[in-house]
Image 1 (cartoon, rainbow, N blue to C red):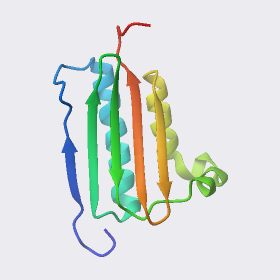
Image 2 (image 1 turned 120 degrees about the vertical axis):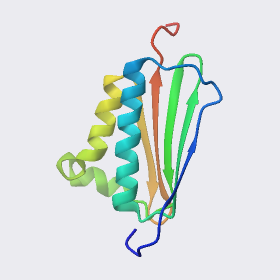
Image 3 (image 1 turned 60 degrees about the vertical axis):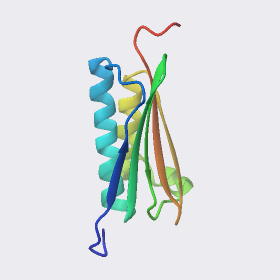
Image 4 (image 1 turned 60 degrees about the horizontal axis):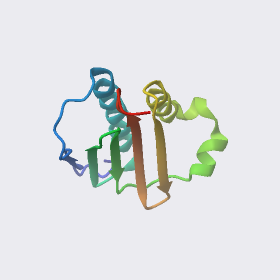
Length: 123
């Protein structure tokens, strides 16, 4: 943090403790790593929470911070070269057949949520 204070990081594991397919596990790890790195470098957050939830057909990873947030419209107008970390998040989720949702507002914080289908799920 810019003020030198520490950032508290919490992890909320899934209730369903079954193993994930390796490629999903590695992909979600990399998404979490990038989202956490973004929050630590840019958000000036006091608290960051990582949540992992496993359902029969999909897994959800949310990384939420209470930091400074950002204006999503301005971010899109800046172009992808300036924000390649967010582009990388979307690409990692896409490669897993999933999607990323990023919600943020100035002064409110940011939530990055990845939703990835589990292999072998019906459909």
